[in-house]
Amino acid sequence: MVIKVFLASSSGSTAIKKKQQDVLGFLEALKVEYAPLDIACNVDNRTWMRENVPVEKKPTNGIPLPPQIFNEESYCGDYETFFDAKEDNSVYAFLGLPPPPGSKKATAEEVAQEEDEEAKEEEELRQLEDEEEALEVTEDEEEEVAEPGEIPCSVPS
Image 1 (spheres, rainbow, N blue to C red):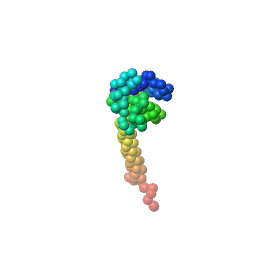
Image 2 (image 1 turned 120 degrees about the vertical axis):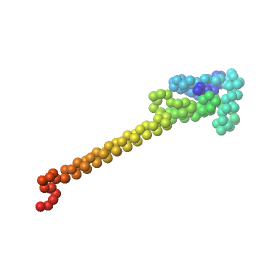
Image 3 (image 1 turned 90 degrees about the vertical axis):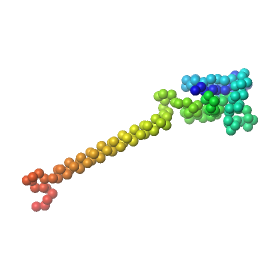
Image 4 (image 1 turned 135 degrees about the vertical axis):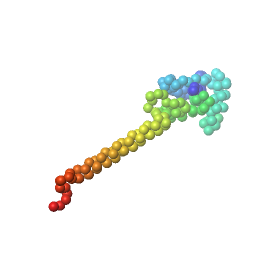
């Protein structure tokens, strides 16, 4: 899966340039494979981007500004949603990518598997405790039983 970042190479807005640099720099730091697609010099890129940004995500004038981020054909979001994902440490989910091996973010399946294992261990521990308790009761009962020829202590004389 390749992340597509739609950019404007010749933007007059310093805010747009900073946002584009922020997105690209962060993707590079995470070693996420991405393709920068210029909308300033390539009409096809500009047309594709404008057609594929969901209507509800377009500004009131209808023309989305760069950077716009896609995972292949699937829309991920604009700079603001990227920034929010970055702040929440959920960039991989935002991009529709699995977290890298060894990352702190475990998948739901891994969490469920760990919970199942913990539940099994707790059940085994409870069974062992029940068995030990049963053995202790049996030993206590054996101590109260008098040997042949002995007088039990608990019987009044």
